[in-house]
Length: 264
Image 1 (tube, rainbow, N blue to C red):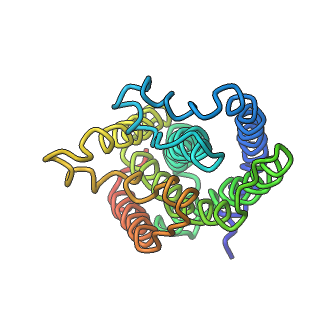
Image 2 (cartoon, rainbow, N blue to C red):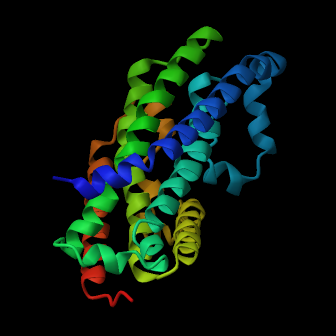
Image 3 (cartoon, rainbow, N blue to C red):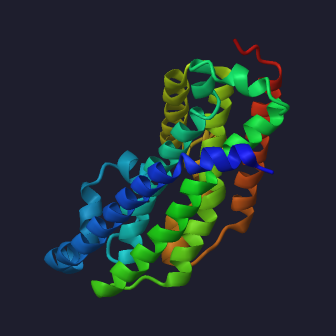
């Protein structure tokens, strides 16, 4: 059972370890820089926000730098987690099917007694390896490091942002999965998936508080707010449910497309 998922998952262990180490190091860098940053600016730290272009502040959720929570929400979680890790999962999802089609291995796989739906679903399930690795190691790094530097962040809030980001990241991977069944070349699928996610990320910030705000409902970033979680301890369970439904819809679309696709 789940032989395909286990096979694909084993091949993702090394990449997951590298991504986790990189994100952990990224988090440590930001956290250990903050005390110097905060002490050098003192009470004027939030005046730095006035120098930020408004569009940039909105895009990266820069609301306050006067606390470790606000600093991490904008510098680590909005930029590093929502954008960079989101692109990582979109990129990974985009290679799930297209890579095997491009290398002419998919026709061999489909000659076995497996359905196309199973191939798509188990390939998608293999992304649980990097998802679990990142979602368990990075929050521990954040909690321990903030305690060491003397600016502790509540562990409950850090755990919450990572739990709530699970449906966000699976939605990003779902975007990649759809491009993976649409395009036969992994490189093209990956570029399209990354481009779509980046476009949605910045488009959502541009339409916020405008007459076109409703357009932003299609962006996954609308449904996860690191500032609300880390600074206000507000957990939007309903928004996480929306992302979970979106993930299921994207996977269903990918399955439907792949069932009708000619694989050469």
